[in-house]
Amino acid sequence: MSVKYKNKNGFSLSELMIATLIFTFTFAGIILVFFRCIGLNEMARNSSTAVNAAKSRLASIGNTPFANILATFNNTTFTAAGVNGTGVTYVTSLDVDLLRITIVFCWQEKNGLVLGEDKNINGALNAGEDANGNGVLDSLVELTTYVYDTI
Image (cartoon, rainbow, N blue to C red; front, top):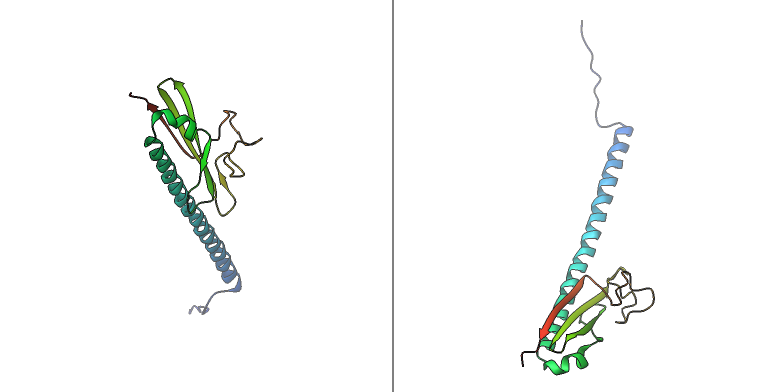
């Protein structure tokens, strides 16, 4: 008794369609991950620039005489090269010789996402922007320090 085997050369149409469908979904997922990584890279670059701008602002405050800090820096804005954003400096007098300095930087990514409460990037707290109700702008990049007059 002899057994005959049917010789199959290649794939059937249904196998090709299933393989193409799997490849398409896999490729689309890889492309989405790639574009998401590009967006995260931009966000990391902008947040690094914002942190450096805030640290630079803090250094300029440190080089200012204590008596002039409140008048010179309270509710003032600043920008950073390379990022579409605005920083705000808040100076609060806690005592005659103690100041709390908070530096906040909000910016907008290329995809339109605004990081921080300043939705129109003007450096001012407008109606509807204070999400947590604390009366000041908040952001991912926020530095707070205290300055004490030693004289």
